[in-house]
Image 1 (cartoon, one colour):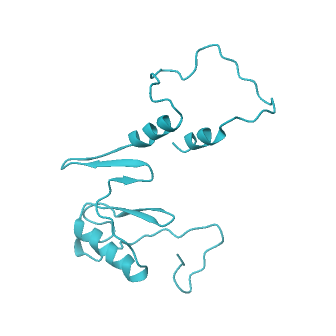
Image 2 (tube, rainbow, N blue to C red):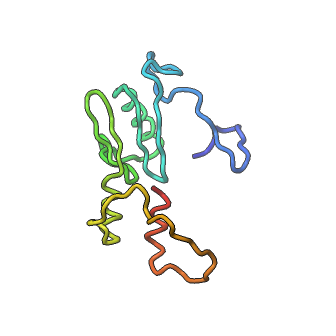
Length: 142
């Protein structure tokens, strides 16, 4: 995404959107419903807004600039499960955690308040590589 013509942004800086992307009269900045939030990760966008009409206008606006594919109401996003009811939205990582446990053969593991027995000592700098370091790296992002 490029800044508007004639507007220069220093390298490593971003532009903060101060006006609404939605042109509804009740959606002025700030909109009557609150805010329109776009969660962006590479080429995935999740739009959060109370008003369905405003979401549609944002989608139309984005589709005029880029070709987008509308996947409908979000059920999952970046490993998060999203459940909706009339009163609220619940977000969890249950499936992601279950997949990690399955991949590492730990589906029968029992929960514990501490992950290791007390009294364990850690030694640093042995020079030994972990046999399966990928599974530890995946846990960093939870």
